Image (cartoon, rainbow, N blue to C red; front, side):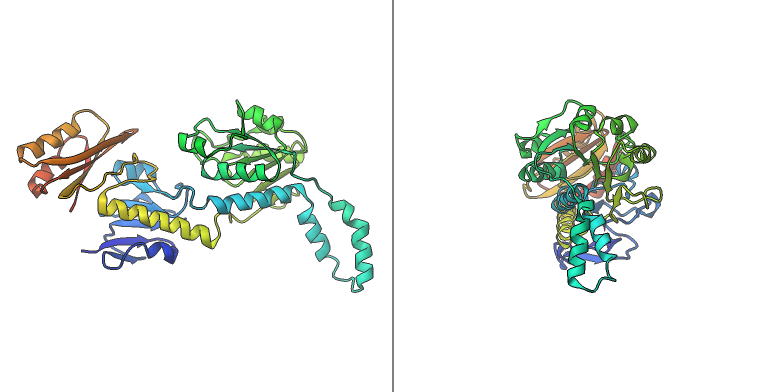
Length: 391
C-alpha cells in the first residue's frame, strides 16, 4: 500500500521526486495521510489527523508547527537545517554592503533625475552630488556573529574573505559547528562584549523563549554609534521598542532586516526586506530534498535525522522485521517491551535506543514480526506513546 504524503504548500518538484510514485501518493488533500510536508503553512494541532506519523518542514524554522503537541503524540517534526544557509549568507552579504555604502539612497536619487535629458548635464549633476552617498569599506571593520550554526558559520567565513575581523558568540555551539568554524573567528565571552566591539552585528539564532527580546536596550546601548545591526534570523529576537529608541536617538546607525513590521516601515534608518532570506530556487530545492529524504527514511526505516523534538537515531537494517517504539523517557519501558518479545520466542537481531528530554525512541530488528495481540500489549504499557511495525 502506498504511503500518503499531504502537502500544505507548493513544494519543489525536485523534492517531491524523492518520493517514488510506486511507493508514495502525494496530494494537497488526504483524509488519512501518513505524513505532512510543508513550508510556511500555519499548522494547528487539530488539523493533524490521527494517521499522521511524521511532519517534514522544508526550511529551518518550525514556529508554524505545534511541536509540543506533536511530541505528546509521538510525531517527530523534521526540519532542513543548513539547506538554505547559502541563500541567507548571500543576502547577509548584500545587507552588509547596503549598510556600508549609500546604495539605496543613491538609487533613489538617480531615479529622481528623469527630467534631465542631456547626458552632459546629468554627468555634471551626479559628480556634484555623489559626495552625499559616500560610505565606508567593509575591509578592516569588525563583524559580530551571534549564533554560529549552519548559517552563522558561513557568514563568518564570508566576512573573513572580505577582509573583516570576526567575533563570534554562541553558548550552545555544537561540536560539528565548532569543526566548521574558522580558527580566525575570535570568541566573545559575552553578548555585551561582542556588541561593544563590533561595527556590524548579525543575528543567526532560533526564536525560542530564551531568545525572544534578547537584543534589548542594554545591548543596543553598548554598540558604537556608527554600528549596524542585521537580523536575518527571526523578528522576535530583537526588542522592537528598544530598537526604535536606539534608531531615533542615533545610538544605532542602521537596522537591516528581513522582517518588516508596521512600526518599522517608514523608519529612515531601517532597511527592510520582505522575508526573502531563503527565497531562491536553489534553497527551495535543497530544503524540499532534505525534508523529503528524511520523511522517506523515517517511514521506510524508522530512522530519524534532524528532528527538532526526537533524538537522532539511525540503525542499518539487519533483515527481518523492525519495531519502532516511542515512549516517555522513564525506566523499565524498554525492558517490558523486550520481555514481551522474549515470551514470544522472538529473537532480537539488533537494536538501538536513544532519548531526548522527555522522549525515548527505540528501533528493534527481529527475525519475525509480532502478532497484533502482542503489539497491543506493548501499546498498553504505561509510558508507551506509540508502536509501529516496519516490514
